[in-house]
Amino acid sequence: MTTFYLYAGDGVHRPALALIADFIETNFPKYSVQLVGPKFFSSFPNWEKNAAGIIIPGGRDLPYMRDLKGVANQRISDFVHDGGRYLGICAGAYYAASYVDFERGGELEVLGERELGFFQGTAIGPAYGLGQYSYETDDGAVKAQVLWKEPDSHISSTFIADVYFNGGCAFEKAELKQNTSVLGYYSDILGQPAAIVKCRVGKGIAILSGVHPEMGDATNYIECKRLFKRLILQLLSE
Image 1 (cartoon, rainbow, N blue to C red):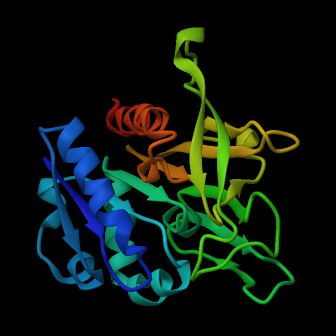
Image 2 (cartoon, helix red, strand yellow; image 1 turned 90 degrees about the horizontal axis):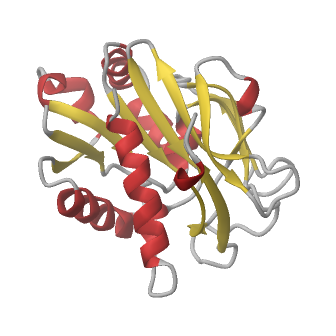
């Protein structure tokens, strides 16, 4: 099981694909990354046998729902329940919650249930407020202050990182959900809601991130790399 299947279907933010693939193959050379479309999950035989995990990146959640509904989602869900790994970033995190509450009351409003439901709760956003996000520009982008704190960790495993954020979610009442650990908090938002969660799903693990650790630039690259590496290590743990 050495291949991460990185979803590259309609709605995906294309620049993220190369960044995610390069990070994993550089920092975890034992693993390869293969870009796949929606029909791969529903039609390709026995893809589960060689899968280290599935990665659904940022972009637009609604095309994911349209193209992966039914058989593809069921095979993804079965894979994780049987001991597989799922990483959802931004839209991929919204997509793996039980319910999406995005831009409620605004022109971009998206409300509704999702099939995977790895996080048994609501992904609500944008975490930094309504009316700022744009699909076509970075007008609503900010550098989120993410407090990373691994479960049962020592103080040396706790740090704050500046991480690219653009329309991502917070996980509502994540600390109260069964089989859920909060790995990262929005430390600069009132109440410090959950930014990154780790969900035990049957025998498997799903990690969902409202922020983009793959999008580090010259000002925060080292911090993002540190965060992303811890995230992948948590995904592969156990």
